Length: 153
Image (cartoon, rainbow, N blue to C red; front, top):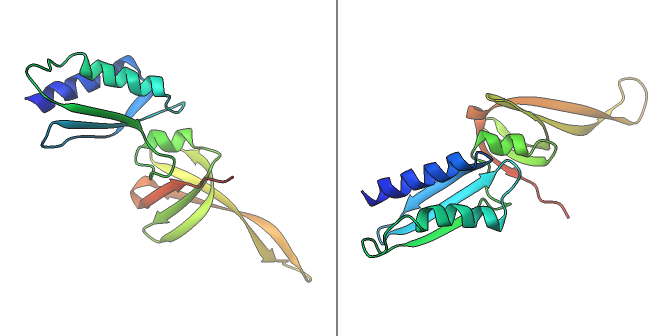
């Protein structure tokens, strides 16, 4: 019953803010509510406060003792939602796929697949030396085991 109430409040809050989307949601045995969100334009502290208030202000504390934690998906967290790929187009990713590991720039993200691009130094077809060649891979979401944005400083 408590979980249904929290779920309904969370869904209503996310409908009000279509730029935000759910990454993870759980309720531990001691009524500790944990919500992880992301946003098409990132997540601000105010966004977390909005979700927190939407839940917290609509549950009677006399009836339910609970704690609530709302946070954004961490920069080092794996991408788990297709919308996260779309918002990270142009950024460097490291991918584990069903057939190996890849690193490159996320060039495109559709509903079914992503396109990753990277440069490779290869021997010239004629003569000595090497040239830089742009490579590309199209990968279906179901073939992605894990994807992370590479943080560069």
